Figure 1: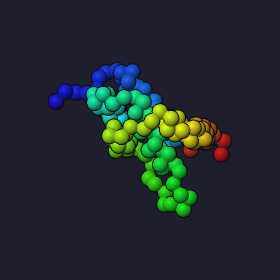
Figure 2: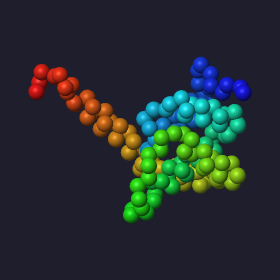
Figure 3: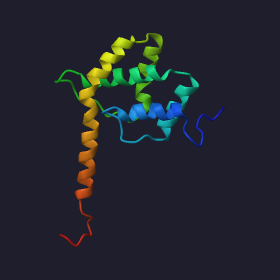
Figure 4: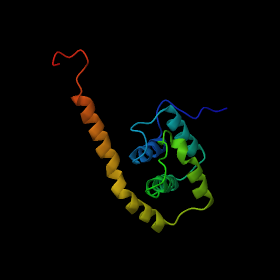
Length: 134
């Protein structure tokens, strides 16, 4: 079997990972498995605009659930979006609908940045256990 990963990421894989990390409910960094998934998408020649649409659709399906719905487990991998990518390969969205999804995502896009900044500042404010300032 041919190895998909290379020593450096291709621009396509880099773009897929960047789009993935911009989503509000994804991890703050990718892992080797995410890179492999992105490389497989490139190998399958999945268009980047379709991947973006799948990321938006999959994320908004989670974010716009009814208020009383049970919480979902966190997204831990780019592979979470594979069923949505397959769905859109079978039945692509119109450009106008993708634009609508982008507009619906805007309020949530800031959420991840704010949360990561809060976590980072909380981490920096904690003193080590052996600190003399106790």
